[in-house]
Length: 512
Image (tube, rainbow, N blue to C red):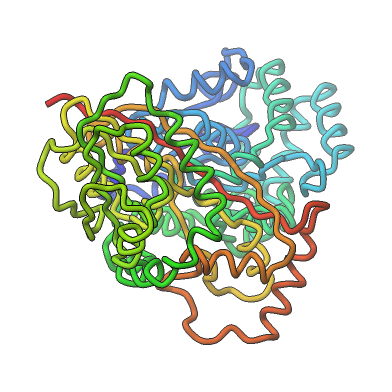
C-alpha cells in the first residue's frame, strides 16, 4: 500500500495560493491528508523574489516539498510539477495531479498549443502594461465558464503586487517548458485534469496527451480554472485518485497470475525465436554486474527458458543458481534445453519459498512487470537477500507498446495492451523495503514489417493482452482492419515503430 500524507499545491502564472482556496475548502477534513500551498518566486508572498533559471527553480521547489506527497499543479504549476516528478529521485513525490496544463504551452513541432504569434503579442503587451495585461489574462482564464463575468470579477478584485521582472521571466519559462518526453515515460502515477471550455489549452492538446498514454479527465462546463469554479468536482477526482493510489488491492490488479502462468507455459516452445529484445536487455542487465562479485547463491527470478541462467553460469561458474519462474512450462523447457541451473522452482515472486538471507544476488530480466503488489514484492526480495546482497532487475514501464495502445484507442475504448507501472513506483517500493541503489530508464525502438508480425511476436513470447479488463471475445476482422489502418499512419522508413520502456534497477540489500 502506498501511503500518501500530503497534498501540495503549486499555482500558475499570474496567480497565488488564494486561487486554491475553493479546492482547499472542498478537501477540508479529508482523513490523513495535510494540505500545503507553495508560491512561485515573484508571486504572492514571494513577490520580492527573483525568478531563477529553470534548474535552480526546480531545486528550490523540490526542497520545499514534504515526503510522501502528491504534487497538484495548475497551468504553469502543473507543468513544473511534471518536470519535478521527472527529475526527483521519488523520495518525496508519489504522484502528480495536473490541472489545465499542456505538455507545451506554446504550439511547436505539430504539438497543439497557443499560437506563437498570440503568445508573442501577450508577452509584448505585458512589457508595455503589466496590470492591464494581467486583467486580460483574468478574462482568458474565466472564458468558457458558465459564470464567466462573475468569475472574472472575482479574479480582478484582488490585484496582486506584480514583480515585472519575475513575471516576465516566468512567462518565458512557460513558453520554454516542454514535457512531452516526460509524459511518454512518466516516473510516477499522474492524473491530468482539463476544463472542457479552456481558452488557453486547446482540446487537441488533450487528445495528443491521451495518445501518449496519459490519464486525462475533462471537467465539463468550465474553463481554465476548474479548481476554482468547480472545486467540488475537482476534489472528487483528486480524492478518487488518492484512493486508487493508496489501495492497490488484489482485486484491482490487472493481471491474474494464473493467466500469466498459462500464457507463458504455452509460449515456452516459441519464446526463444521471438525474444530478440528480451535477450538484448538480459545481456545489458548482466553487464552491470561488478567484476569483483563472487556470489555463492544466485536467484534467477523469472528465469523463463533459461537464457539468463546460461549467461549467469558463464559469468559465475562456481555459484549455485536457482531458476525460479511462475510458469512450469518455462522451467520444463529450461531443464531440457538449457540445464544450467542447480535447482528449478515454480513459485510466485511475491511469495518466495526461500530461506531468509539465503541469496547473494537476485537477477531478474523482463519478468517482474507481471507483479503489482510492489511493496510485498520488495519485502520478499529484501528478506531472501543476504546482508549486503545485490539485486539486478530489468522490467517494463508504461510507455511500452505506446504506438499499439494509441492505435487501438482510435478503434474502440477497450483494454487491448498490457499496462505496466512507472519507474517511480518501483523505486518507492524498493526504498520502502530498505533497499538502496539506482533506477534508470531507456526507450528501445523496434520496427516491424506489419501489424501481423508484431502481434505474432507478442503471442510468441507470451506477452499478448492478458489484462483482467480485456475483452475475452473474438477480435473481429473489421476491428483488426481498422487497427492496421490506424497503425499504418505511424509507419516510418524502417517499418512500423514499437517502443519498449525498459526500467533498470541496480539495488543492494540493507545490512541487518
